[in-house]
Length: 510
Image (cartoon, rainbow, N blue to C red):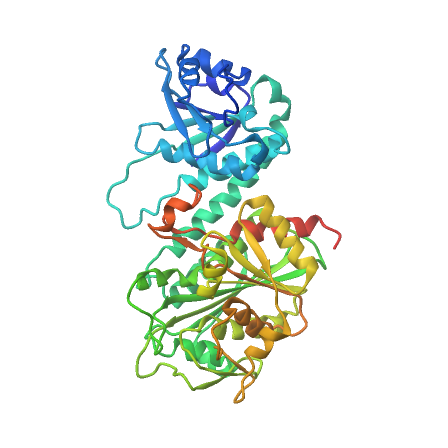
C-alpha cells in the first residue's frame, strides 16, 4: 500500500472513501459534535440523523459506512472509544479497522481526516504515524499460496486540512519513515509465514545473503561442517535429526556513527519444531512453522536498521535448525557442549530453542564484544500462560536497557512486560551432570528459568531476553481478540519495537 500526506481536507479529496474518527458518546446529549460538521455536510445530513438515532456510538472497532448523495464515494466513521483512554495505539487500531472494513468493497483509495485523530496527548505527528502504521499493517495478506483475492485499499493518505497545512513538511518526513518501518514488518511476515518445506535453515541463510547484497551488509553463513569445527554443539544437536542441516547466520550493519554502540540481536530460528524425541501432541503442531519467528525478526530488524541508517552498529545472529525425531536426533539424557565450552544436560528435546541460542549468544559475545545483547525467541508456552498471546515477556537485569525497550514498546504499540529474574530461577537450571540443564525438575516459572539458562551464555554483557511465543503469530481462535492490524499468521512482532529502540539509542546520551 502507498501512504502519503495531502494538504487538502479529506472530505474534499477525490478518494473512494474518507475516514473520520469519532469518540464514544457520553451522556444523553444527542447533538452532533462540531468536529463532524463537514462529514455531515458531505453526507447530506445522513450523519446527523444516524447520530440522533444513536446508530453511531463511537465505540472501539465500530465502523459506520455512509454513502455520499453526490456519488463521491463513502464516509466512514470509525470509533475511537472514550477520550480518557485515547492513545496512539487506538489510532493505529482504528486505521486497520477502516482498511479491513473496505476489503472487497471496491474502494481503492482512502483519505484520513487527521484532525479527528488528534486529541489530548496524541499529537499530529503521533496520529499521522499511527494512521500509516495501522493502514499498512492492516492491509497485509499472505497471498503466496492463494489463487484469488478480494482486493482492497491500494493508496491511502492522511489529510491535513487548513488547520494543519503548516505541518506538511514535517509530517511528510515522519510518515515516510513510518512507512519504511511498516513495510519492513510486512517483508518479515512474508518470510515467517513460509511453511517448513520451503523455509529450511539454508533458505533463511539465503534470505540473509540476498538482503546483505541488496543493502551492503556483511553476511557470514556457517554450515554444519564449520559449526562442528567451531564447537557449536547446540545447533548440531538440535538439527541432527533433520535432512536439512543447521545454519548459524551473522549479519553486520556497520552503524551510522564511528565508535558508536554495538548492539547484538540474536534470534531463535527453528524452522519446524516437532519437539524431537520428546514429540509434541498433534494438535496445532502445524503452527510450529512459526518457531523461526525470532530469527526472521532479526532479518527484519537488520533490514530496518540499514534502511533507516540508525546510528548504532548492529550485529544480527540467526540460530537456524529443524527439530525432528529420527535415528540421528539428539536424545533426553545427552550432554551437549556449546561454542563457549559450557555444557548442557538435555532433559527434554522440546526445550530446543535455548540450546541453539546458547551457541549464538556465546559466539556473538566472544567474537564481537557488543555493548548489549537482545535476543528474540518463541521460547516457552509459559510466556503465553503468564502474559497471553498479544504481549511479549521481557527479562532484563539491566535497568537502562530494559527501560529503553519499554519506552520503544510504548511508542510502537508492541506490548512487552518486564518479568523478574532471581537466584531461585538460576538454581533451577543448574545440573548435577553438566553446567546447566535445558529443563527443570519442577514445572514452575518456565519463562524465567529459560531466561536464567540463556543468561549463562552472555557473561557480564548487558542483555535482554524477549520471549515472543504468544505474540509472534495469530491463529483463527486468537484472531478475534487481537488488534485488526495483526492478521492471521505471522505478526512480525519485535521488528517495530527493536527498530525504534535502535533509533532512540542513536539520539540518547546513554
